[in-house]
Length: 217
Image (cartoon, rainbow, N blue to C red; front, side, top):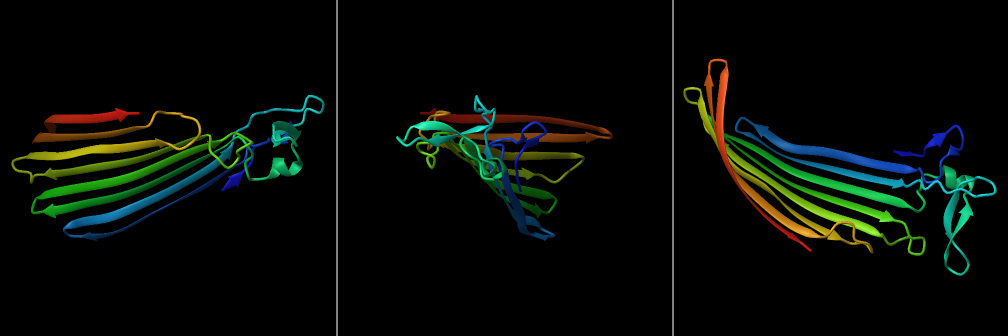
């Protein structure tokens, strides 16, 4: 999908263009013993950033260009600039990917669930006409999530759930400017939950222990 913003006063607004591509899919197996499936999604968003600069004489939108001596300058935007779906400077690109492996195994009256996920987020901004192909801001983040738990069979309206879950992250700055300091983190938590049903009343109690390790650069 691509689009440029319009209004009654100016027609197309300079650098309001954006495009968006997204998709996802799931594949897996489902049986009496449970299921195991993999889900993947992808998102790509590209957009210009409206600055609103105008020529003082004509009132028309202006864009950044390079002068003959290589220095940044302004020029009146053409109709093609206004109608194009390709953003000018300043522009941003946001890409996000996610991969999830989801499992459930039934063993007698009990069950085991296991979910593992990876996400990658990449955000870039280009705003220097002298280096248009180099991102000034580029934030790159990988995240890994995990969740494994065991749920006991229900006996006398009583069951127990125990498990472990957490997340690991690693961020990088790949641009010429630093937006957020780079860091790595890892956390893990173990828990136990006891549930008891008494007619229409559900009672539960739990305990959890967490550990977090964080290192900023």
